[in-house]
Length: 332
Image (cartoon, rainbow, N blue to C red; front, top):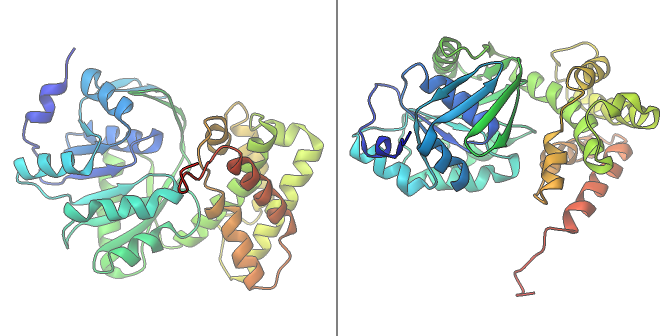
């Protein structure tokens, strides 16, 4: 079944969503929102986008459905569709890798307007600040999600685990916009919540990611091995404890009283999963280490705390990255 003619039809609906970085998380959110008849425009890699336009977005796993929505590869294509439909982007989700945030934010300059709300739903610390620095006059919200989803093939996403999505705010005006987004997400069967302590949510997930992701990437193991293998379990515990000490020094209230227990609970729950960082390493892509352990290190050192376990694992990931991320700036 061909879906390409959809690209040439006007977008209908009062609220338009655009998703920057339509990988697994972005495609799931965009697809579920589109299934409730909201106009959604996915921006992603060519192979994924082509499959979506050809056969629809296939969501498998906990939900089984095919969603028809508009998908493009470039911002210029997105601008043309919005212009032809006489629409503006009301909400733009950033679901790119954390290190791609600045590039993605700069790319949307031609389609953003003063009323556009920008939402970072990404891993790591500080992504929303990057967006806010580029667009100081727009509402920029931070979100975090614990859903399990992967992209086994272009045009296909596998919804593997229920989780919660939190949208935060800082001001009363931001709260109203956050509530509207959460309302739409919940209508779209996304388990979303307002979270006034969004930094607590971000750091809670970051502790887990710092302890789990780099170790799986270095040792090339499934999540469960971080608990099953005692040396890895002890190392993960030490990394998480350092990150926890940083949050205490910063007076950040986590969403759990025991992030160490939470870390291993998640390790067990997602035992058969391949972490995103291991996937990046296997595919010879840059990881999000700078926004995870890298941020914990810089914040910890600023508080004069020991973060040696995080430094050790951080340096090992950088070494792995350098083995395949070649700098071609000198023509070599």
